[in-house]
Structure formats: C-alpha cells, structure tokens
Length: 202
Image (cartoon, rainbow, N blue to C red; front, side):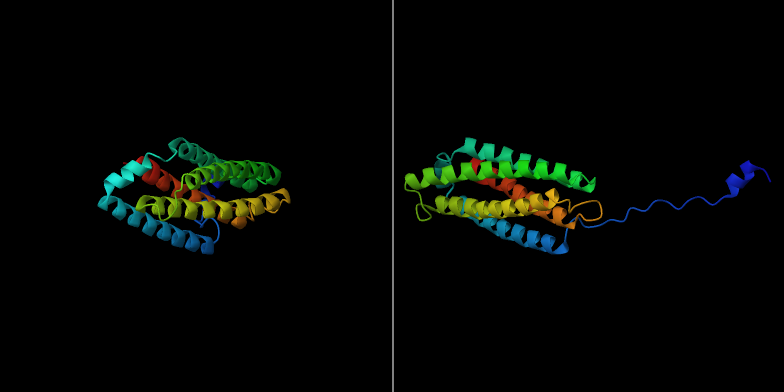
C-alpha cells in the first residue's frame, strides 16, 4: 500500500466545535432584562400620556436642548464602541490596551454626565420641576432614571479599567469584562429609545 492510499484511508479529523456561550454572567442578563422591563413600562406610560395631550407635549418638547441630546447620543455610542474594543483587546491578551479603551469610554461617559447636569441646571433655573407639567414629570423622571444608570455604568467601567490594568482578563477569563460591557450596552440602548421619544418625536 503506497503513501497516497494510506493518506486516503486515514480518518478525517473531527470538525472543530464552536460551543455557543452566553457572554457574561447569567445574573447580569437577568438584571438587564428587569431594567429593560422597567424602562419599557416608563416608555409605555409616556406614550399613553402623550396621546392624551399631544399639544402640551409637542409645545414643551420645543424647549428641550436637542443639540445637547444629540451630542450625548454620540458620546454614548462612542463609549460603546470603545467598550467593544476593550473586550476584543482583553480576549487577545492585551489587557493594558483594553484598559486604555475603557478609560476612553469613561471619558465619554463623563462628558454625557456633564452635559446632562448642565441641562438639569438650566431646567431648574427656569423653574421646571416634576410638578410643572405632565411632560416635565416624565422628562425629568425618565432622563434621571437613565442618568443614574449611566453613573452606575461609570462605576462598573472604572472597576473594569482597574482589573484590565492588572491583567486580570484574557481569553480564559472574560466573564467580568463581558458582564460589564453588556450592562453598558443596555444603558446605550435605552438612550437610543429615550432620546428620539422625548426629544425628537412630535
């Protein structure tokens, strides 16, 4: 039997398996789903109230700073991009590079917070409060609820940054950074619904 025949009769190697796995911890996904449900209830209540008084909502929407909202949208999307790059860097074993991406994401988040605080300051200076109108009650409640999630996201990103600098993430230890990234993407996703709903759609 020649070498060619031997090769032909040799068993083919088993196909490479790619087992599907949930990115991050199951607990963070349960938390994310619960938070999305809470925001969904808020959004539905806002839509119902708007349908009952569209003229009031349209008029008071005009006073909102849509430019600030648009800049904040860009900041959150950019932060999410940086977080994705950080996860890829960690998976490749380049923790210090991942830490730099996380620091950049934190910078974007800080920009969002600064702009949002300026918006709140302007609103309070104009005498706007939760009791000013139905629209302002929803505007302040929805955006502040999201604002608190951004602050929590910054705490998470800060913890991920510290761990990435210490080289704690690699291809075999991705649970922490993937869980944090999933939470941040949820914060981003909620804003992508909140911004057009409250600031733009009339």
